[in-house]
Amino acid sequence: MQYLKIFMLFILALQYATSSIAAVPSAFTFLTDDIDIEVQADGTWMKEEVAQIRINNQQGIQRVAQLPFTHSSSLEEFIVIEAFATDLDGNKTEVTPDKVVTQQSPQSASAPMFADVLVKTIVFPNVQIGSVLTVHTKRINKKPIFAGYFSITETFSQFVHYLSASVTLKAPKSLNIYIDADQLDGGIKDTKPSDFNKWTWTLGRKRAYLPERGSVSEKDFSPYVAITNIESDSLFIQSYVEQSKSRTLPTVAIQKLADQITLGITDRNEQSQALYYWVSKEIRYVAIYLGLEGWVPRSVEEIVATRYGDCKDHVALLQALLAAKNISSSPALINASNSYKLPKVPAYINSFDHIINYIPEFKLFVDSTSQTSRYGVLPAVLRGKQALVADVGDGRSYLMRTPLYQPEKDVVVSETELTLDENGNWNGVSRVTTKGVFDSEARYIFGIIPERNTAQFANSLLIRTGQSGTGSYQAEDRINYKKDFSYTSKFELSSSLPVPGPGAFSIPRGLAGFNNIAEISDMFQAKTRQFPMTLPFGLFKESFVLNVGSYMKPIQLPKNTRLESGFGKYQSSYKQIGQKIFVTRTLELIPTSPVLESSKYAEIYEMSQSILHDLKAQILY
Image 1 (cartoon, helix red, strand yellow):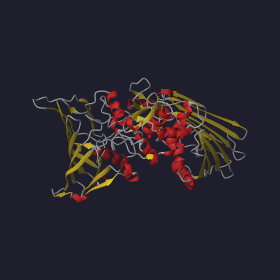
Image 2 (cartoon, rainbow, N blue to C red; image 1 turned 180 degrees about the vertical axis):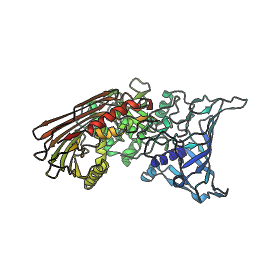
Image 3 (tube, helix red, strand yellow; image 1 turned 60 degrees about the vertical axis):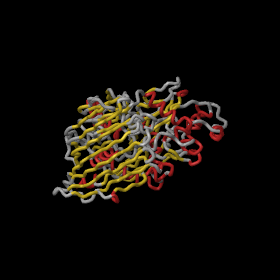
Image 4 (spheres, rainbow, N blue to C red; image 1 turned 45 degrees about the horizontal axis):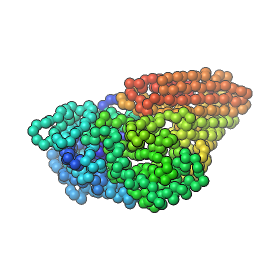
């Protein structure tokens, strides 16, 4: 994994929050970034990297004067060979050994069994605008994750300015090497008489782009080279299974625990559900990603004893508990970031960073690390992803696509009643019921907001949506998974409408849910896009009842609207009965892919503009 480049991307994402397709004045520039990789016959490897980074402005000083590198001390040795800063006058200031600081990763510090994961940070002294930082490092893989096999991917971010970069690979002729390279020059195998073959890829001058709102991971569209000697998907996943299978077998203690959890439950799907909820609730999730701490889970009894674990521990324990009830399950490797593209070769060690369970009997993916997701509901970040499943029920492994949109599950229903007072202000109440992925997200939000702070949270949402007023939330029991999650909001909006008029107003948004039609339409405000983006999905039903009483007399309502495109459909209706105005709006987004390519953006942009036009339509009085 390219920790230096990942860090660069992270700080750029913090720097830019708007969309643009133009080249940007970069805070820093890679003058050179040369990577040499040498693979051994046993699958171990060494990577030596020399980079020169020029600081272009004050933001560059703040962002790259300290460079962190993450590594696993049991799997790798990471060495800083040389690091120094050169100022505009050519004066060189070395980074002394005391300025290379090694610390535990934040995740490791919170969980002792992950103390192997370390962060080594290089702190450059005397950095000024125009300084050039030179860093020369070596990463030595001491132990292949899978015996005899390796997998390396190098990516050059579209959001970083490069003048020159290269990747050189040396590998024994005895190894069959599989390569997928994109947007890089070279790559021709040099087979001159020796024990090694050699490849070189180069990247010339490349401008930097601004990150775009909602974009997929830059790994999906940036220049890269993926290299491995793993010949097939099945070999990759079976290598994982072989390493972990001894840790997933039910012991006597696990059998007893499974029997206790399912006591009185005879239906097999309900047994599976009970075991899932037990692991989800009782085993605290520690977010250590695959690859940092190897791929082998701890023993299931140790996981139960400590009551915490990472994703592979969750999978191993749930697999063992299910096996104790004769329910087969299988590990499924997946990506939990906003990356959706896999290389064309099985160089998956840097592509998959998460693992979940697949239960063939019920054709169901489950992720017990998502401690707010109901049984059978995957978080949004795992929807529509390719998962490498060890056994789909016939003893064979496959790349399977996880469910994207589940119409019967992924629903938000909000019902709002607003009452106008004599000063032209609104008092409102909204009740929101969530299902599927939105159920998980709402439970998570209320889990991190202290109950005493719901009013403050509500007020900040009103300000963010351009409304003036106060509000509060009240949620139902968020750990009751037997029914859909609901919450209620109360709010007062300082609209100060001139009553009795004449005047005009749009339907107030109030606090009608975290996932709503207005928020989704706002995602598509950029007129054009350079890069792919993730697509929202779901069914959103919103209704409003406006009690205007005797304070105003409506004379014209907006026209009913009906829209349809290749991405879904929207409709709204407006009617008046007595002194009440009834408004309904429904949006259903039905994407066929989790990713929207920039070439298809125009259609959904036009649809979103029409929806926003309807949302802003005014009632005349």
